[in-house]
Image 1 (cartoon, rainbow, N blue to C red):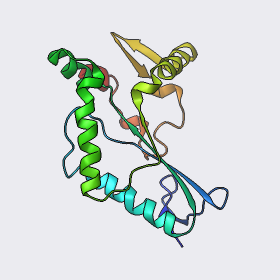
Image 2 (image 1 turned 180 degrees about the horizontal axis):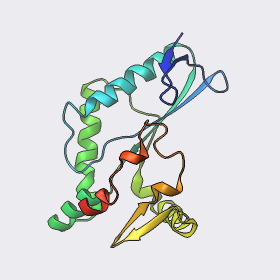
Image 3 (image 1 turned 180 degrees about the vertical axis):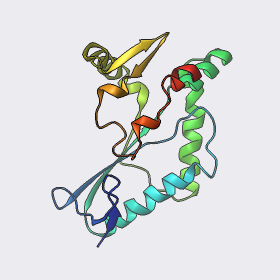
Image 4 (image 1 turned 120 degrees about the horizontal axis):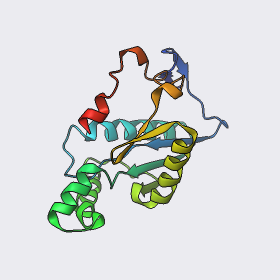
Amino acid sequence: MLRLTNTLTGTEETFTPMDGEHVRMYACGPTVYDFAHIGNFRTYIFEDVLRRHLLSKGWKLTHVMNITDIDDKIIKRSTEQGIDLQSYTAPFTQAFFEDSAKLQIQRPDVITPATSYIPEMIELVEKLLASGYAYREGDSVYFRVAKFPNYGKLSHLDKRELKVGARIDAD
């Protein structure tokens, strides 16, 4: 039996796949702007232990991991070096998987780079803007927290404690 804490309720619950046999596990992968360090690998070691446990229960598992191969740091550094994003991130991505193998972390079934979904991201942001759930500030787009009543519910974040404009000032 596998028991996990339900982040929303804070209670421990018995885990079973939704259909009784197939676990679908998504994990955020690394942001490949630099080499990963041992502290970064704590997350991936936990995911590997969980993955192996789920498989030991006889369940089918599909483990998907993204690679964040585009963000402000990556764009800045690749521009400074005068190379495209893929050329900049490729060595860090390769090193991540080499280091993972040295740690005997099993590879996810599906590995997908964020840059493969740029059109979908743009479409989603446009929908959020059109519906009022996001707004532009300078060259950036931000989620309009006040428009989403359940914002912070899963993380137990109290919206009253948020500092208005804090993210914009830091951007």
